[in-house]
Length: 272
Image (cartoon, rainbow, N blue to C red):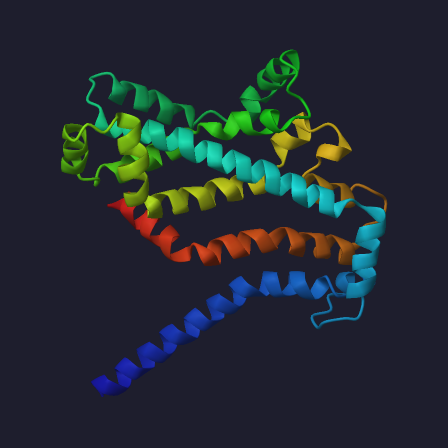
């Protein structure tokens, strides 16, 4: 009796997991399938592959600058992620390694800044960037995200488990602080860097509000701005729209699956 009950519970759990998996994967399936259908078929809710993929690609190449927008997104997201990793990891390293009575107060102020909505500082930031002539520039896109309280806190929490003895031994051997950071800290904290890079790249890749304000030229449009523009007319070509959304999703899927193990290890390290 107990054995049959155990099998029933196991079957129920697997059935529940299968249903949840199908519900999670279905939006991606519908997105890819819609990219092969016409706008009429997408509106009708067709759930099988169509024959309009080539036509949608031709429309994309002839009517919009998807390649340029994709390159802009890759460029600003990659540069922004690398800059953010460097600045925030240095800050997290310093907050944990160096002993100072005021650093906890400063960290509390940084964490408090996370509660300030971006919309409340958006107008002052725009005026400031306009005065220093950073509109329509890569620097204007990147600078607000180079240093974030979340990433600094993330690196600091992971640095708690970092063995201090290694740092002390490196100092005794005459290695500089930056040498300790680059040659000791960075290799050991590689999973943390991978997790932070995925989160940062994803946030930059999907960023819409700030690029909408600072990127005022079509030559500087990113993929979110381009996709938003496809729905701004009187009629929307949903096949073209889903094709662009599918293309925009590819880099994130590749990044996550190539760094999945390090991402999980980095997140678990932060919890510990």
